[in-house]
Length: 114
Length: 114
Image (cartoon, rainbow over all chains, first blue to last red; front, side, top):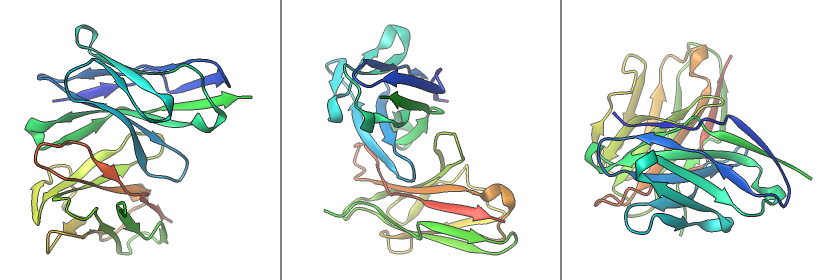
């Protein structure tokens, strides 16, 4: 069975500083990996996805993520955080063999200090 | 193009009462998902439809939860009777299917059972 771990429940970062959110997954085959962002009271918006190919993936809002098979990781990064990036971030693994079912991590809440 | 539409956005009911949530997926999306998101946690799959067929309902508590997608388009999720522990956000998502695992989420219905 697939699983996702996001080790950091909360992260506080100053505006303009860099951000890295950790994600580790467990899946027996080649995973499809996703990062979603959720603002308060809103649904989930896709930031970026990895299916295959280049292991460094560019997404929306200046985010990028790197797939590292040897570490079973898919960490999300942003070089310079804006106040509007304050939200909850979810990493997910999708399994085509399981009918495209998404399994989510517990999320990381990002707070941005002025 | 309209996204995934859910209604209502918020619902407050007394325990033991019935409640229903409605979802209209993105036009042309064959796959529809219902996810449950408890406070401070990532979403968890309740049920997945391929067209009108429920192909994965293993996580749906069938004693009180039911779902339908009669014409393979919009879907309804019902709880009867509701319990205090059902208070959560219910998210609907859709996907084109055909091997594309990207899911698009609605804004969710926040249920409060009192």
